[in-house]
Image (cartoon, rainbow, N blue to C red):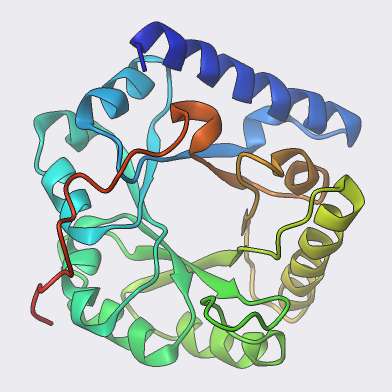
Length: 242
């Protein structure tokens, strides 16, 4: 994809967000675009940054670490949006500013213990498996309150909010149903004193529904970069030690 096409795509995504925000009386500037740049080359990330994006999300750790080592990465904010494995928590804690897929207390404890003390607290969102889908990450809805309370006590983490990957829905109302369920949990936690400010929900196909239901962070890949290329840098399982 050419830099010009990418710049056009950034404008198109911003326009979609603005239209959805206007429908529900929200300020589009309150919604952060996290460019899901997994499997994208560094040149595409640099072009997206020139088009005004500053937040990037990665899922494949070895690929991400190669990108984060580049000088251009230093001025960007990096989010780990993939499934977290226990033997990969140290590099995630050391190199990322945000983690969106937290769903187990033992992982949270490792991230907190391994976060460098010279760095600010790691910003985290708890992932909720809204429909109990097998094979998909996320804590069960009934366990959200207990996990949130435990994570909030960890010294090197800052609990910011909730995240979801809902079941695939094609109709707007079906999409909104799941996002509304996450928003209700978010509001319940805040009513109990959690002071959360982030709802990480919505991707290329359903960002309008997410914005209408209160998303503050949308994770956008295809609508920005086009169809995702093969995992050209991963080359097999990660083997980074704990």
